[in-house]
Amino acid sequence: MSTIDSLAHAFMKFPGIGTRQAKRFVYFLLAQDPKFVENLAQEIAELKNTITQCPECFRFYPQVGMNAVCGICSADADNSMLLVVEKDTDFDSVRKSASYAGRYFILGGIIPVLDQDPESKIRIHELLKRVEQGASEGLTEIIVALSANPDGDATRDYVIKMLDPLSKKYNIKITALGRGLSTGSELEYADSDTLRNALKNRN
Ligand SMILES: [Zn+2]
Image (cartoon, rainbow, N blue to C red; front, top):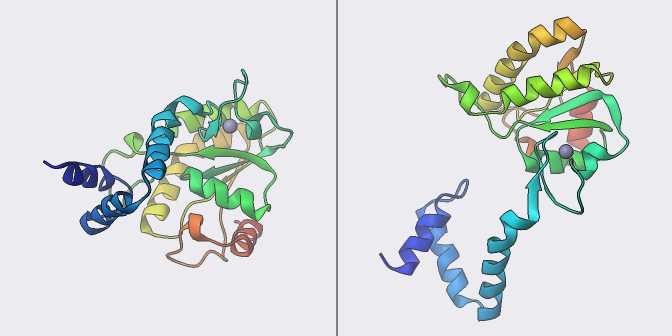
């Protein structure tokens, strides 16, 4: 296998990238200045050393100093609310909308409709643990903020079902994003106004 093919195969593992796009990436790199390619390779090589995962919200962030949790989890925020999103890019969209002041949790995946092994797809055990911790810190509401598509719905139903016992035990309200986020739309592509409305109309 040539380097063109093997690199294209690597790019095909990226989310949403097919054969043709993967090849286009490789030819794009071949057309670039050597310095660009060198810098890119170096940044990829350093990624895992400079970026770490927060043990509380599970998002990726640049590690600075010896802080045990990320800047969002250690900052002053509203402990009464916990927003559950699928992935880091969804978290970025909510941050950008500046319409939420509570805590976050990144599920790390989505459960396809009719999936037989949902536990392996998302951080459900970590979420339950986080909610137990939250209960002792004044948590009163969990907002399940997932994309408005079939997989997002399946995941939301599963998460709400799994949270139910803790919700009853600690009297924590569970809500989901309301209208505003139109059917089929993905959270990461939602604009700030839409997100603000969906959060405001949660139910
Ligand atoms: Zn965090």
